[in-house]
Image 1 (tube, rainbow, N blue to C red):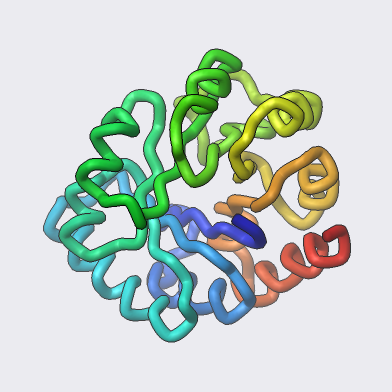
Image 2 (cartoon, one colour; image 1 turned 120 degrees about the horizontal axis):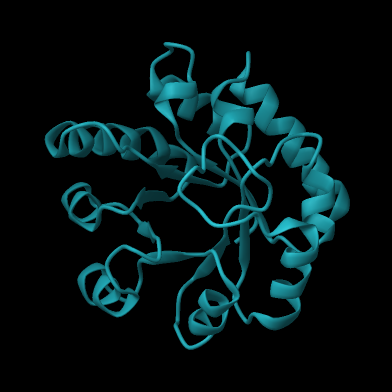
Length: 206
């Protein structure tokens, strides 16, 4: 896992079509897209996921579905991201198959230790900083927490929560392998330019 990992939030898109935001982000260099929908029907979620997958195919960018394994299977997504309250990893892996990308959020040190025994493809360090887009999580990890996880975990780290052009450098220096970005892309005047700016910061550091 490397680069920019877009996590969608339609509420931050300023009434612009979500597929347009996603297309601009991948044109700017986003390496992964996680489709996150909390408030639409399953039918609409599946239809949207299929449309987004078609957008991503020419760019060879994986589509990852947040939480909903049924939607991931229905649209042929490349993977899922699950939280601590979602379906257990072992069950998700059986359903999704050995080649699927499966990420797991870690919100406590106990979560980090438990993840060490799982063959997840990455762990989502959630949240690094306090953010309005992550209101159902524990205390922020901060940069020191991120460093601690990096020194312990065998998994790639995807940092999420308050990641933007200002914080990106410090988060990468603290050990993040990949940056999950929500509002800094979805709400940007130009999602493509915003993505490219953050990506350039990462590439300079790597």
